[in-house]
Length: 356
Image (cartoon, rainbow, N blue to C red):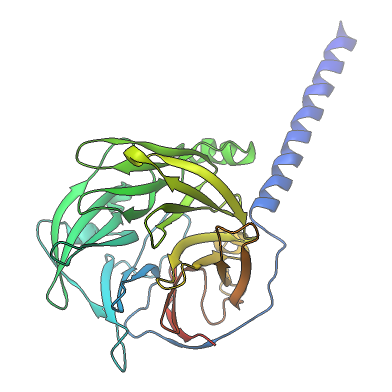
């Protein structure tokens, strides 16, 4: 009997050790811990007034750019206690400078914590609606604003729902409707990490409208950035942990049908599109271990990736900009416009670059 107990105990210990070893290697692979990228710069300068990150940026066809800044997020460094802010910038101006947007309405600005954003233009009257993922007191909700005059947002409503539980990004498809990504399934950190280690693709994309709220797509490891094709036919989702961009087709009833995934070899955050070519531009983390374990002497780097012809049999994935964190740390978004490129970050600064 004693021998049997020893055998069982040895087997249990060996199995646990194997699980720990497998988990460690899995995390190393997912976080790209040993990855280093050579520096590849563009002609860039820092944007004025942006000191604590521009986590998401989106640009209208007329050159009006919106920026969400000052995100406070678990596990990310934070260098300011001030609430988050929204900025606007006219890229057609000879010297574009971000201007802080004045927010009017009943929104509690003291706890404003903006994350992913999207803009919807109503073709009926050219009204501009801004959708912002907000995390007041670590909650997840979507704020809907109307952009008026040159520097003012009118807060229209706050949207929350049990399905919108771990919001990261949003893409508007109407004045009151959108798709949004949940980047976690479990709120508990230990369970979340276990899900990642075991490779459980339980995250999803949710469709919201005043009439219905439901899961539109699932089976994603960690759904992060989201955007829509210029013809409004396809939805793109960044599965940041799987290092892929997932392509979905919109169907009747706003259900999303999976088409394919494109490997990008990096942990990509937000997705923006060139409104003329349809190319996807991604703000990515080349090695997320440096972001999770922030060290100013060895800062997290930045990587900008472009996907050309994503719907073809052989999409072209190219590395357009990289930095070791000395210029810009933890890039999260790259928004192109007419030969310019805006690069935002999780908590650092933002750049305006000239594309070659």
